[in-house]
Length: 408
Ligand SMILES: Cc1cc2nc3c(=O)[nH]c(=O)nc-3n(C[C@H](O)[C@H](O)[C@H](O)COP(=O)(O)OP(=O)(O)OC[C@H]3O[C@@H](n4cnc5c(N)ncnc54)[C@H](O)[C@@H]3O)c2cc1C
Image (cartoon, rainbow, N blue to C red; front, side):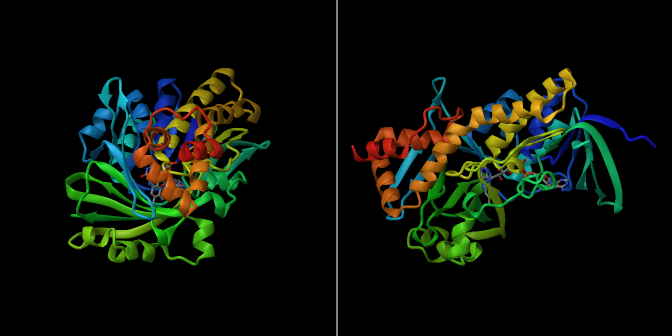
C-alpha cells in the first residue's frame, strides 16, 4: 500500500517542533508531527519561559493560553555571587509597561503548544523514530516503532525536521551527535512546596561547591518552586560530582539556603537531564532535513535557557521550508538558508553568553561582576539583557569591554 506523503515530518512535539508546525501551517504546508511520548508529557526543565519566548508566543497568539493555565508571572532576576553579594534585576519595561516572563511547568506549557499545533497538523503519538529513510543521499522520510503495538512503520515527506531534543535520533543518524563535554551541561530539577522567601523573581545563585555552575530557585504557581543545579559535563566528570547529591547538599547544608528549605516539602522526585549548548555550532541543514531546538544544540550557555531558541529556530526553519516547498528544492544548498538565518539571528547573543559563562568560571570575577552589578546600571543592563530580554543582544560584549566596565 502506498504511504501517505507529507510536505514535512516533524520528529518531536516539544516547543521547537510545535512552534515549527504552527508556522508551517500558516503557510499551508501538510505537516505530520510524531512523538514517542503521549501528551501531556513532562520534560525536565527549570520551567522559566523568558521574554524571548513571550514574543513568539504573542506572534502565535498563545500568551492568553498561558495566562489561563497554572503559572507564575516573573518580574525580575535575583543573582547571588559565591561570596553572597546579591543583585536584583527587574525585567525592563516594554512599550512603557513593566515587562515580565513566566514560569510554567513544562507538563502544562508543552501541552498548550502541542494542542495549538495539532489543530492544523496530523499527529502520531507514542511512535519512536529509529531510522531515516534515504534516497540518493537525501532524507525522504522516517522509520520507527508504534509503541502501542510494537509494529514497524514508515512515513514519507519532502523535508524531515529533527525536533527530538538533546538525544536526537535525527541528529545521530545525520552524524552530528558528537558530545563535547565543554559544551554540554547536565542539570537536576526537583519540585518543592513552601520554600521560604520565594518571590516574583527567578533566583540564580553561584554557589562555591558547584562552581562553575549554578543553583536556581524558580517560583511556580500556588507556593511551589522549581529547584535545581546545572554544571558543565567536563567539570562534573573532572571532579566526579553527583549532581543529585550536590543539589540536596546545598538545600540541606548551605548556610545561605538551609533555613529557607527547613519547612519545605519535596513535591516530586529529583530528575536530571542534558543541555546541549549553543556555544559550539552543530551543522543543522542537510539534503531533505533540518535540526531545530535542542537537536540543533542551541541552549544559551550562560543562562541555560533553551525554550526561546527552540521556538525561534522552529519559526526560522518553517520560513525556509515554506520557501523550499515553493521552489520545489529540498537540496542541502537550499536548506542551508535556514542555518545561515539561524546563525545571523542567534550567534552574537550566544557568543556573548559564552563569554559570560567563561567569566563565571572565575570566582573572583563572579564576585566582582555581581558586586559591581549591585551598584552599576551598565553592568546590570548587560546581564539583564542576556537573561531577560526579548531581542538578541546585537552588540558583542568582549571580555575586555566587560572588564573595563567592571573596573571603571
Ligand atoms: C534541568 C534543566 C533545566 C532547564 N531549564 C530551562 C529553563 O528554565 N528555561 C528554558 O528556556 N530552558 C531550560 N532548559 C532547556 C530546555 O528544557 C530545552 O532547551 C527545551 O526543552 C528544548 O525544546 P525542544 O523542543 O528542542 O526539545 P524537547 O522539549 O526535549 O522535546 C523533544 C521531543 O522529542 C520527542 N522525541 C525524542 N526522541 C524521539 C524519537 N526517537 N522519536 C519520536 N519522538 C522523540 C520527545 O518525546 C520530546 O517530546 C533546561 C533543561 C534542563 C535539562
